Length: 171
Image 1 (cartoon, helix red, strand yellow):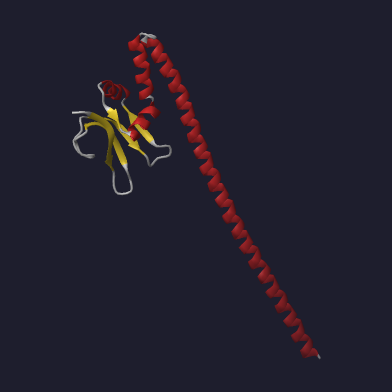
Image 2 (spheres, rainbow, N blue to C red):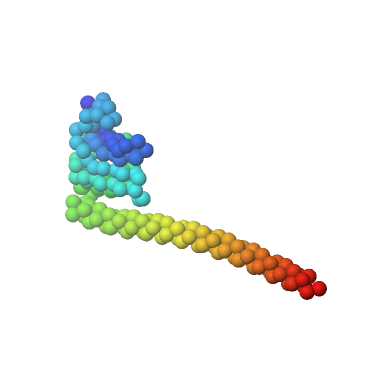
């Protein structure tokens, strides 16, 4: 039986949460699996991914085929890059220490990129919130000015009526 690395859906309706599992191809999507490799939560920004790299690499080396989504997740977390580096070690192109150094270098750059994306998202969200706040404050101020102008014209009209009535009573 062939093994696939795929997502197993959990969570309630419209609130997905996934386990990344190694399962046989004949098993149902949410059914029996061989081993849980990690979790994936697409609702957070950015999506929260936790993967056991060693076990994922173990299953990939045994021939497990990841689904398209799992391939993207494993690539994002560096498991496929690590597999690529280990293949170079097995071919004798470089030693394992060099491979791990390359991976740590890549991982550091990747973590910086993710942190920048998170900060950009947080900044965009706060800017949008501030912009919405400014817009609502501007609308309220416009309404208050319009109300004050309306009250002022009403007061002027009332004053004009009072002066007319006092003139009529005198004359």
